[in-house]
Image (cartoon, rainbow, N blue to C red):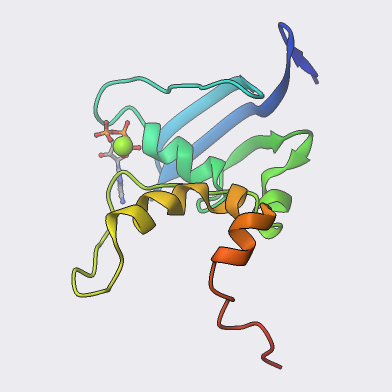
Length: 132
Ligand SMILES: Nc1ncnc2c1ncn2[C@@H]1O[C@H](COP(=O)(O)OP(=O)(O)OP(=O)(O)O)[C@@H](O)[C@H]1O
Ligand SMILES: [Mg+2]
């Protein structure tokens, strides 16, 4: 497994990835590496499978085959540790729910914010904290 990307280490390593919606293949033998500390854009036509790739990357959808690692750890490990944040392209929105645009956008920074001591002081305690 490669550990560098030019001068940057590999952050995300996708190998031989296959994924499908109800047996309809969408991603077939995807092999990609994303460098750490850089912006990466996934560009493609409508229906190419960009959103599906993100669903697999965030661990919300299981691949049929292949592997996704972040910093040499399976993506599931990062998901459990709360390292992953994702701002969806489209979502079912409950318009009456009192969430501001700012809060919605900052949801994409969740993984970063929860490890930042300043944000930890500003964020409300999770409702489950202290529960048996
Ligand atoms: N819930 C679903 N069930 C079945 N097929 C789906 C579902 N969502 C997407 N698809 C199909 O899977 C394929 C990939 O869709 P995906 O949404 O990943 O594409 P995309 O590249 O993100 O497109 P866009 O640029 O429109 O956002 C398309 O053929 C799409 O019609
Ligand atoms: Mg999409």
